[in-house]
Image 1 (spheres, rainbow, N blue to C red):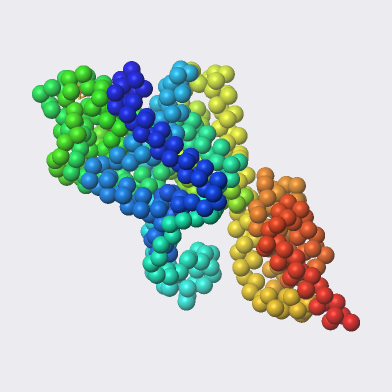
Image 2 (cartoon, rainbow, N blue to C red; image 1 turned 135 degrees about the vertical axis):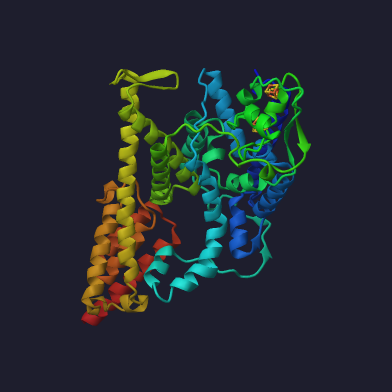
Length: 498
Ligand code: SF4
Ligand code: SF4
């Protein structure tokens, strides 16, 4: 099958990607067995280097990947990224069971990776060096809402770690993440759905590759415009159109898989030096976009709201998973819109609507989309309740010594009212089995609620909350410290009463 498992280059690429994953497993095993290993090669950590000045293996990998991309194009994305391996494997498995992933070509959300890259790599520096110093004097509340930034403490290096997994998601988040970013993204958005719509590093690589002096180049005397190269491309690049217009592949989504080179029956394509894509054609090359203007807006809005609303939800959802949910949400929103507005619709080889009537498959998809949108609305409600609680909580700036001295009852009425309102909203955001609307518990809520009860002099409630939280997290040092504080405040208050 052209450009798919079985071709020569695909085998080499599969072997390389397998090797990358094997190295990751060996690294984790080494750390697990010895308790100390080389620090992790996670590209996220490059952002920490830029922010705090700590050089680590993640930064070195990132710098190397960027250099290779600048010189030769996105070989890292095609040959060395574990997420590429996941998507390729999921695409292959889906094809094996007869499901052929189709490309979802949306213009606006195609810029999401670039926006994410700016958010991850530029925003923290911009916020620390420019924005916060500018706004803090006049809008301290806004500065507080934007949150603190880590200070730059000079350049240093960190090569080894005993906490390889620290900051990475738990297994209960990692498994759904792999299923969603693998199977669901591939099924809804195409074989490289995550690369095209959700990967922040891809956002940087896309732009860097535009200046690479090496490109997929056509020998036009050999090309007969059969479009087999386009059919083989898992990144959705219209290879035959781009080479006939520009002489090279100019598309930012080209990940140098070389499937197009491999599949060409006339050996018309080759990787050759020449003028870079940026000097030849637009970054999205020649794309036929699937969405009308209104659908583009809808997809972008749903993706933005979903990603912002679900990031960090219940203290669990990492950025990449939130963006994955956003991209899937965008697709479902467009599908739902079309189901409602078009007289006829087909998706994934099935008729969902004909002559204005939904079929059984159409109704099933309507149910899925409605459930997804209700879940999103619920998550946003919980998130807004938490935002409100935290906003009120931030207004309470009573020094801890005063609260722990047992004199909370002498605090101003406005402070006690803010504490009461914050308690109300924290309770709404809390898990359903703790009296709230949430589907799970936010790890920090028990501590904040306990603190607010202490501010109000409600020692029993504070103790009860902390006891309950400690049953779930027995060794948590923050909880143990908070319980000691609570006891101190109660004792001080009792002494004052006598
Ligand atoms: S490059 Fe090869 S595969 Fe692509 S259109 Fe030309 S002849 Fe066909
Ligand atoms: S254009 Fe060719 S090299 Fe680039 S991603 Fe598509 S198949 Fe791979």
